[in-house]
Image (tube, rainbow over all chains, first blue to last red; front, side, top):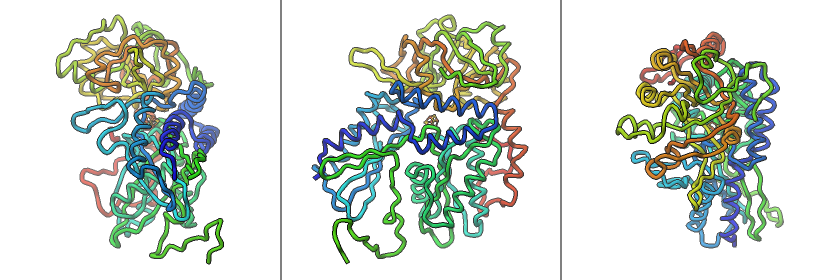
Length: 321
Length: 226
Ligand code: SF4
């Protein structure tokens, strides 16, 4: 049985960690981009960003005052049990969000879309989002918080099989240029691309690809991985850098996730995570152990299963056939 | 502070800058501010310009610098403020209020994210002798937070909430910012857009326009979304 109080405390720590500490993988990616950037203005921006990460860590203050929209991803081991169940879990995730807003502090970004009501705690109707996935043969839960910048850098388009890979590249460039001008997307970023699924799935896949996979990670399908590499190259050859200044760094990494879609279509989404790629994860075990990390490890072989049957991998401790 | 090593010209500027100081600013210069800035975005503009509320501050003598932002701040139980990070929001959305705002506030510096259109600079900023400074990155919230020495006031906090209230901040070596517009209405972002657009045909080479069009879509690479 997983203690709900441990989840509550851990969630609070993750909120602060995501807001203050730039994840190592993205930090290294941005340093590399900075070392290769030759535009003078774009270089200045990247230097300032690198200093900003240090200042945030040293002073324990949020790296960006725009909180974005904090949300939660929960991965439940199939054998995990939470004291109080799913309702208790959602209760503490909402509480942790509100408490961190006051304590870090974070800017309370969440408002009613029409009445602009702000509870000053980043909670409200359907906020924060809490999404779930499952993992076989496990008795832990993983909780991940992502604070993604909210307004620009995301787009969706219904493409068709006849548009082909060229069409995918074109829409990719379109999105990067459109939101890269003036740096609206706060690039260079990890770009997530969702391909296929039904429309809502296309969006979910692309967002998760951007926010839940780390720099350097590759899609297990070698051809998709090759497309990821090619999209990185294309993005960095646009001639644009940070803030839309002349330069060569738009994309720190690109992750593509696919889902089976309607036979007549090829829907695509593009999502730019930003210069503040805020994510933090913890695994909470049944015995109360907590392990924090910055790699959400969201996309497992089980998540990407392709056929009806799921072949259970042998449990590590047991000798099963 | 973020005096990033760079060949770019760097300037310390008052938040009530003289016309001479403003005249000397060139697009692409780096600026750090000293004095007082106040935040103002859609909440403040709607309240003052559309609903006619009186600004309870002495503007522009207190400050001639309007920051399009809201801070990561919380109100402590004793009523004091815990303000740690500051980040701008995209300014192009506030274009329709600015002419009136200049008239009411006497602002000379507008700080924000992403600049405003060249048209706005020529039609609204130039006649008011004002200049636009953009924040950097734009995520330099912690660096800007370090430049805030004191919270002087949070006007309309109860009414507008933390994100939209008018925060009055005493600042020192507050930056970095980049000069986007000069007194003649030139725009750094537009200059960079033009340079980049010249190479875009090469980037697009080999791709074809999508089978299903979007209403209003064009192939003009000079287009912008703002
Ligand atoms: S997009 Fe990211 S870095 Fe940019 S202002 Fe928003 S949260 Fe900050």
